[in-house]
Length: 256
Image (cartoon, rainbow, N blue to C red; front, side, top):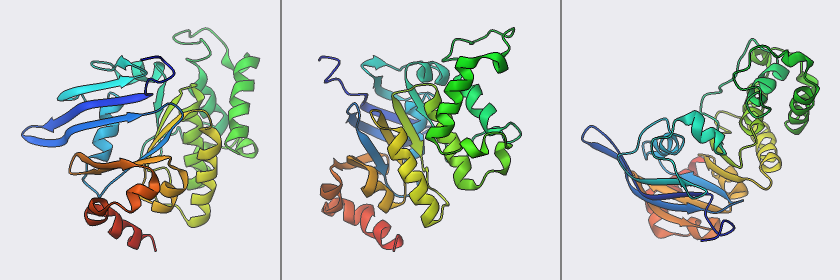
């Protein structure tokens, strides 16, 4: 398989058990380069567990995870990140007492070659400053540059976290419920931001808001009790009888 046709992310017979309880039960999934892919399903379906397996927070109990053809078995989260995969979390994960600019700058340090060097004065690095400011412009937070991140609105904090997620240059971006707890206007803001910053990248997201899912995703996978019961284009998934029965009918009704 050539690199151009190789999936960005491939799950092959993926399993995860906690004791005798099997949470992920033989998931097979291939996500293409540049694809926007949503994973949906009821609470307790295993969506967060799946994310944690892919990003190395949990070891898998069986099967394989491949990023651009490279098996991720035994890799630590920071190693997977450096291989080109970055994620956000359900709970906003920022440094609230640092400024918005400092949050973004910190996320750039490894990529810009600072790594474990403690003698550089990062405030004097023009390259680092310019890169951080470019990301602030992308996420529409230039005007908030010097504020402590903790005083931002909820939607702005989520935007900052997305900026941190993309700062390392990863080409596979995983977002865990990026619009959870938002108003309609905040959701619209974040959706447009996601659309903009993931151009040319592979996006994988878990999301409960069906308007967001059907508005952003090229393909959707439905996870129910640790198994994918359907994968396809949004219109195909929406009309799938199994999906309607297991999840989607109730989810769409809850959105209205």
